[in-house]
Image (cartoon, rainbow, N blue to C red; front, side):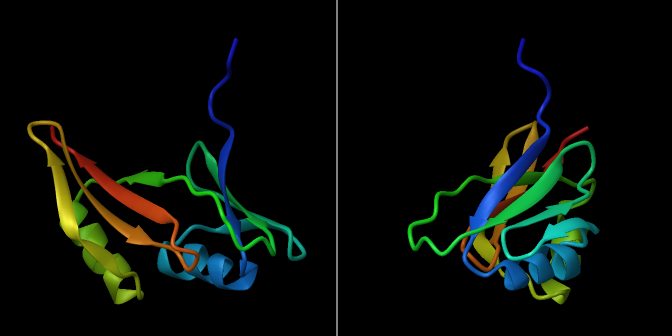
Length: 115
């Protein structure tokens, strides 16, 4: 049987910049760092981790963060330095979402589910 998601991780070429982004802009507490190779953040039931690399061709994923108020969350993150894509998506009757990027260009998405 496949268990629940334990963590999601991104590869990063600049671990210090990525840690600062997820800690200071997004607001996740840093719970573990192993030199320039690994860092983990408390992000609810699933941990977000960063894996340092010198590889110039990074793979990517998307971390989706649930919020109660998309507009407010976006304002808070923009005030901390996050730059959002111009497009705000919507799945009619289900959810709205907006995307910003970390220092390596990995997409991070906010999602607000409709009641």
